[in-house]
Amino acid sequence: MTGLISESSMKQLLSILSPSSPESLQTVLTRMTDTDWEDIIHRSNRHSITPILHKRLEEISDKCEIPTEIIEKIENYYLLNLSRNIRIQHNLGKIIKSFNEAGMEAIVLKGAYLSEAVYEDIAMRTMSDMDVLVKSSDVSQAEQLILSLGYIPHRNNPQLGISCNHYVYQRQNDSTPLELHWHILHLPFSDSISIQDIWDRAYRTEVNGIKTLVQSPEDLLIHICFHTAFMHTFSQCGLRMLWDIRVILKHFAGRLNWEQIKRTASDWGVTRSVYLTLATAEEVLNMRMPEGVLKMFRDSRNTGENKAMPLEEEHIRTAIEQIQLDLPIGSGLSKYLAFFWCSNNTGGAARILLNRLFPSPSEMRKMYSLKSNTAIVYLYYFKRVWNLFRDHGRAVILLLRRNPETVEKARSEKRRHLMREWMIKEVTK
Image 1 (spheres, rainbow, N blue to C red):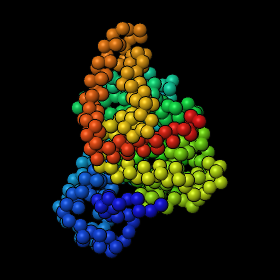
Image 2 (cartoon, rainbow, N blue to C red):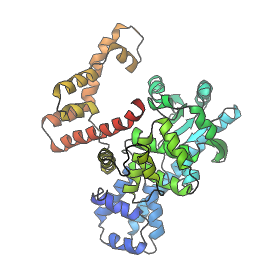
Image 3 (tube, helix red, strand yellow):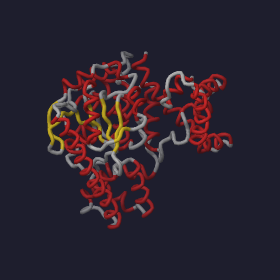
Image 4 (cartoon, rainbow, N blue to C red):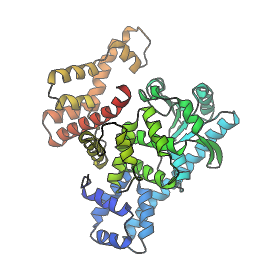
């Protein structure tokens, strides 16, 4: 599968990031205009990989001609991220230290560990939050310690706890939230695995000089693949998440137990998420997976086919489409609205849409954190209609006018949802 990345600024960005020789890159760079560079910086910021772009330009700057103002602009982003990550690591260190002093174990997840230990440069990997895993029996104590450090619980924590197995906290005047997890997967995937196995495989290390636990390399890779494919559907920092895969494979080269990865992914019901992420990373970043890895995941289907099936190829194309989008495809378009507009079965789609517009009273009570059996829930239907009109009204108007861009967004949103449903069927079938 080749030629899927065709948009000009994306191709230029990926060309610069590729391990091509500076001499071959010079031909690409000399043709680039100031507008091209601005588009590339926009793309790299959109995907949260500008610090990685900075590092690459630094490596080739003595052999390639790059405008000085571009170097300076990208370096500013790098330094800003360095400053931000130092602050995040400091705040996370305080939290982990307080857990340690209370005799409570915790596993540092994703960005905070990746930036220091895997990227080996805390400025290289951007972070939008702090993620910590504790045992479910320790959640109450962990929350008390977090609150004592000045964090405030998110108002949606009751719903997040049920569906996402984590709570969110944030301090005033601090844009970086803390996510306190007691499971690394969301429903329905979390029902299929023993979280104790993750604790048993975790190992001790230091993050920012503080002793803590981190995931085993195999669990880390599976978790990042699941997060990339299922949770984010390759949008919102898509290239950064694929770059995580690249860096993990390089850092742990020769040490990853692929049979364990395959077995664990199967146990968790996330084989499709892992395969889709690895195949997409290979295609987009022009990298080679370790010998036989993709074949191993294809063989796990027991179909007798060693190549990607048509449906899998379709979902890889959808994943790449999500990465190429300048904004998350779902902006202003709910999956239900997209399905209604694109469905051949208008009656069935209308029933689904109406059910989402007007959920049952019990669902509404959960949605708005209302007391059980309270009749005031019926007043909240007016609020729900207003909220939906506020969020999606413009998209509805544009669809009714058959705006070409909005119609294509609806089709893309449907493809994204079908890709997600394909992944979820592995654990629900």
